[in-house]
Image 1: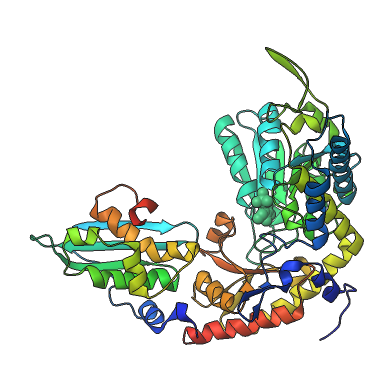
Image 2: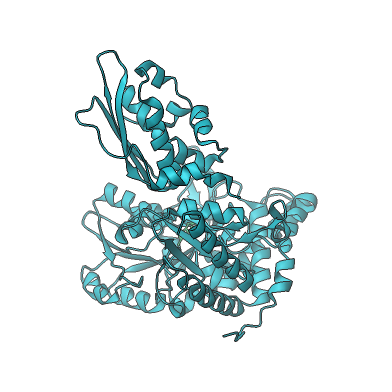
Length: 131
Length: 414
Ligand SMILES: Cc1ncc(COP(=O)(O)O)c(C=O)c1O
């Protein structure tokens, strides 16, 4: 009955595939969502051709934030950094198969925000990265 | 088990609140358990504000026409009602602000800047809402003050055994909440104030949660400052109250400058107005003040003692139902020592997820740190789920909450 908690979300939340760390890594970034205390750290290794070879996340938070991070890691492996930069809010929502209100949207987009801040080599993860 | 001691006619009360009649999803009625964040508003309040805009609207003070006189009279009548509601000696001691937060900031800026200097000590507690924390932190930074904190015990009470030693620092200000918006803890304000006075300190009571839920009397408490918001007590947003002792308010410089707060203005100087206008610069929230007046009338007619005892009964029942659910941990003291607030966690399920699933059942609770991050840190939690109750809350709503928490467990495979 609960579309927001589709099986894939609960499953990825409880049994994440990409939780962990990547050593050595080329890109690492972390941030939290002060509203709910969700925290995400992402590590990525990129090969000489600019393709994401390995990616992992760590952190804690609600099912949506953690499942989104796990699915995002899966998506970026094998993509070029240029392709990763093109990932949008809508891609994340498609991935989750959800429509979310403004509060939960922040949970869903935290991992993308962190990833983009890392990929662009920014000092700070800001909301305009995922708008 | 079913001993009903209160005499509130909750069924009738619920009829007064139009929003309680709505559905939040098709066929799913609203179960509003978020009154600690803001209360719902009875038709009496909505109508008073509506009547003001349809019939009386004019800027107050100084106007010499019927509308101006009527609106001024209504605005000042609201002040009188509030004064009576909190047991103030005079309505001049009731200053209208935007909310509790602004009331506390007013004291920190005006009283604090006039009276506090390097090395002075302010005592707060570990259970404060950010609004009774950050204004003092800002002042402390500016003036190099020292902040000390009354600790919170494991069971969510203030550790008052630590209080006398803190008072030995000869604090200038002791500022604390009368009721915690997270733990529900009702603090012994009167005793704490008496001890603070013995140590020579001024006191500020954050009454954001107590004024809506308990009978309060500022003179009996002997509070120096007392701050609360209309929106948590059946009134509108955009209006709050700062009560202060007369000598204190008179000794304080104005907070904001502009119209209304002055007696005389010359190009290079001004003479401030008398209380309370000295602290009410610019056109105030007139309709909102009138709405607050109507809210005070509404609560007074019902009786704050009855509101309190109804909530006591509901929270006792809620704790009983919540604690029987496997994995639920409720924070804060036993029912006898708290108001109608139950903050809890359900196993390791994030409170956002809990809240989201409850919302499917029409149940509105809050999830997060409830503007008390240091307190959550103390308990080692980033967030909790919080169900809170008011005069319109029912046992049936508590049951719906409990049933839906079982459903959350099921969705998470527990
Ligand atoms: C104990 C306490 N203090 C202060 C506040 C701040 O009230 P307001 O946001 O109306 O200024 C709240 C509201 O959440 C509260 O619960």
